[in-house]
Amino acid sequence: MGTAISRKTSTSTSCYASTDASALKIYCCPKQRVHQDSDGIYEPNIHPEELFLYFMTRMKTGNDHTQMCDDIFGGSEKRWSLAWRWILFYLDERYKNIIGHQGLLRFVDDFPRFYTAIQQKVQQSYVHDEDEHNNTHEETSGLAFLPFDIFGFIDCSIDRSIRPFSGPAGDYEGAGRKPEYPAAQRAFYTGFKKLHGIKVETVFLPNGISTIFGPVSARRSDIPVLQMSNLNEFLVRIQIHNQHEYSALGDSAYHVNLRCICSYFKRYAGQQPLTDHERRCNRAIKKARESIEYIYGLLSELFHITACPSEYNPSPLPGQKHLSWIVD
Image (tube, rainbow, N blue to C red; front, side):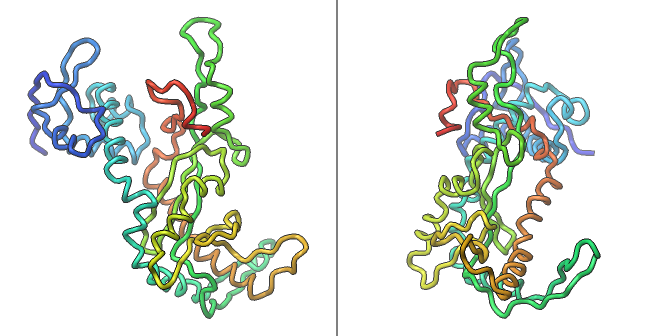
């Protein structure tokens, strides 16, 4: 059994609301930092190891704060909820330049190697369903070379959220809807998935690393999100001094003729149909691109909290008076 950690209290102010990276050094001193609740009772801060265990356990199980306190960690639900919010803001602020698309700067020199890895993947033979009804399969040889100069794959994912501002406007019988309700419902509802949610744009690299942009409203389709992230312009800029330029490949929604964003071979109405070679190329590249879908599945498998709509609350935080950040 581990040794119990001593928690002496003092009367200094809380650092829960801070998002500065240096705050962690202060936060990790349980003998110096405390939190005072609404009743004036001082509660000692949480040891950093305990906070990390709470964070990882909640990410894995998806349990709410009440369940976490009752079943595992004990203590005050209010105390843990403050700590949870603090570590989320802290991690987001500290690692935004790594997990955001700006993190691609670290791998620009590896783009040729990524291209080679994807080409080796599409050169492999694979089996595809020839007739789903008769359960027949056909083995197809791989491509001789990759027809697109790509370094990775791009896609968007949607997570279901709670309905924003769905509660009553007051705590009394007959209270009406909150004034923000109609605009918020429209802002986050996607007719494609028939739900309220948020969307994240992901770039997946062959080395297993992903970068993300978001979250934004799930109401927007993939191309408006791409325009918001400025990923195409960013890729052009970071490769401006390179001899060769590489692109990110997406599904058919990304067939928009951008310089560093590309998609499969496609024909529009009135044009000649795809050739056998183009269809074969599309099948091989789609097979390689399945890896990004596996990542989304692995994420929800590892962290069950991603399947909890209550964890995605698009309503503004206290102090935000309008929804301009949602619909602008």
